[in-house]
Length: 187
Image (cartoon, rainbow, N blue to C red):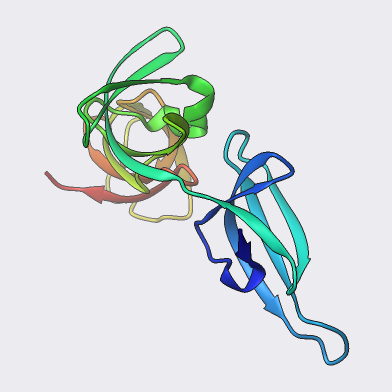
């Protein structure tokens, strides 16, 4: 058990029997009344976010999550297989556990798996990936504006919006958190 004053970003809590990760928190001390903490919690299974308010005298049940580096190996149907970099054991993860990040999964990619009681609850993709454009409309020479964009398919199969000057075969950096083009990369 931890007190409300010990809450910090990234820790795991068990609230009403469900595992949550603290996404954000704010200590508030109103002019009248007792202090309280407003906490944004992200569900480790569904990724839903809720906001709760706790008085400073309350305690919460903290949970120890083990963050493990895992390397993507292969998939069979809806099961994705990773090799744990610490134990070298194979770990199977469902499509649901990977969430939206699945569209950016590349061979041999390293991810972080959050493990509780020897079970992977959530997988966190790297913030950025570098991928090759495999399909898009032809680029327009001299058009280097970033105001307009066109859809492009990257080697993972995901479709991202890229500037008009990007062409097939070019390598780009993509932000996996929002699926946006960041920059062109020269290899």
